[in-house]
Amino acid sequence: MLRYVLRRLLISAVTVVGLVVVTFLVVRVLPGDAAAARLGPEASQADIEALRAQLGLDDSLPKQFVDYSAGLLHGDMGPAVSTGRPVSDELLDRLPATIELAIAGLAIALLLGFPLGLLAAARPGRLSDALARLFAVLGSSMAPIWLGLLLIFGLYSTWQLFPGPVGRLPIGTPPPPEVTGLYVVDSLLAGNLTLASQSIQFLALPALTLGLGASAAVLKMVRSAVLQTADSGFVRTARAYGVPAREVLLRDQLRNAMLQVLTAIGLVFGFLLGGNIIVERLFNWPGMGRVAYDALGSNDLGLLQGYALIIGTLYILLNLVVDLVYGLIDPRVRLGGSN
Amino acid sequence: MSSATFPARLGGLRHRPFLLVGLVIIAALVLVGAIGPFVLADPAARVADPFLAPSASHWFGTDSYGRDIFARCVNAIWLDLAIGVSVAVLAMVIGSAIGVIAGYLGGFVDDVIMRAVDILMAFPGFVLAMIILVSMGESLPKLAIALAIAQVAPFVRLVRSKVLSERELEYVAAARVSGARWPRVAFRHLLPNSIRPAAVQLTLVCGYSILNVSGLAYLGVGIHPPTAEWGVMVAEGAANMLTGQWWTAFFPGLLIAITVMALHFIGDDLGGDRQ
Image 1 (spheres, helix red, strand yellow):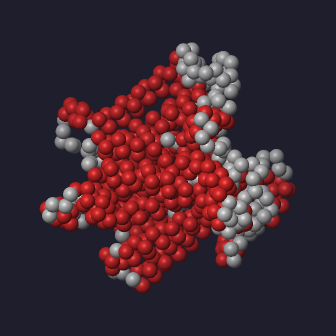
Image 2 (image 1 turned 30 degrees about the vertical axis):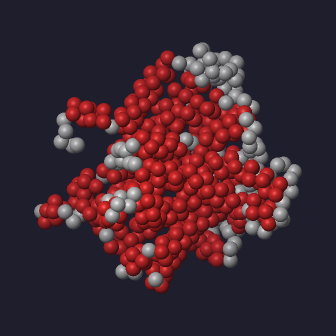
């Protein structure tokens, strides 16, 4: 087990280093000038030169990379040109909002995708299967922005069931005292039930927008993971002993499919963390995606670079955790991995 | 299936309803997209009052400038399909070439390439395309390149894993002993036999790219107004949704959904995921 853990840790570390190199290269080496982009077409040559010098863009590439990496080791991503605050503060301040939204999106994706995937796998080829898969195709064919607009139009503008797209709480409402940064959790901790229910209502539509799309992916993965177990010996044996099909499905097939489903959940959560930039803009959700959107508007490449780096690192950490849990519960994985 | 004659294949379509529906939708779009621009109003022309609801004279209504939304949607068909297809083909060509090299050469080259693929996969494709595009500066070809780079990784993986099993077969050994150098073995012999999984991915990537273009347009990157493109039109219409003019964003978004759905139907069927 130790060798398996070390191996996974090493691979993740190498990938994170690669991530740093790639984000650096994309922003500094691709044709295009961060200083000129930041100042816009009307800037004078002198202003551009001055900003280039200030950002250290005139140094040689290796020196720039060493400076940048040295800063990263101290958690310093440099200042955000558009706001003057450190890039890491700009982004990490908003991390809880993004995580709250991603968790809620994942919950919806699982609540919808899991049962539908099981239903589809219970009778492959039948009507229930076809309908579930049609739902999956529809869910992955809609542009997130369009789906979000439809939900806003239907559930807010027309029927007034949910609050409008103005952020995490009604305008002017003070947030709960910060413990975790997740408003729903923090309001419950503070014993403020009204605030908790408001937070949930404001969370509902953006989470539904993210979750509906992701539920399609969950459905497909659950279905194919369960179907793959259908041919295995333990299923045949259980059926031959006269165990009802439903019981075999829920007890044996599902349990054996859980490993693949776990990987799927890791992937979906990563997708939700990174795919939120559109949803955060649409619902004015003050998360990291919203910062990235503002950085796009002000051509702040350094801030965008920081965003990509944090999202990528979170994604790698997530996969590491999934791999480790995977190894913990399935001896085949950790033994195979130590070869 | 490859030995079946052409009419027999068409007969087979009746038992593959999803493939049939997908193909019919795409064919209809291509046809309407070819004829429409000659028959309908100029997509940039202000033909009526702003914000007319859908009616017999303006099927999809008019937008905030009084432009006919149906004419704009039809004009956008070829543009959107062209972006989707070019991104998918570009990603497939680059990804398959890298995948064949990694799978056939193996060893150190394979390790390096697969690590690089892991790094690419650590970004959500959308974020990667966005960063590349902003760094390179924007234009239509650069948009296609940025989206393609973001989609290369799955092609590398698919083709590589097929090559790993394929390279043990006898025809590869035969090619090698007859004196072929490795590029010839890899690209003339292995690649054609390992490309099928990538071809399935092609239709899916085509759909993702159309979705990604719309997302980027909403963030103000990639294709900009006043171009008649579905994603741009959804983005332009987003504000109208709150004020009641739902049709400005609804119809272009619906066309995106229908197109991507048709591509999914085709891809799922070709991937052997039939019933």
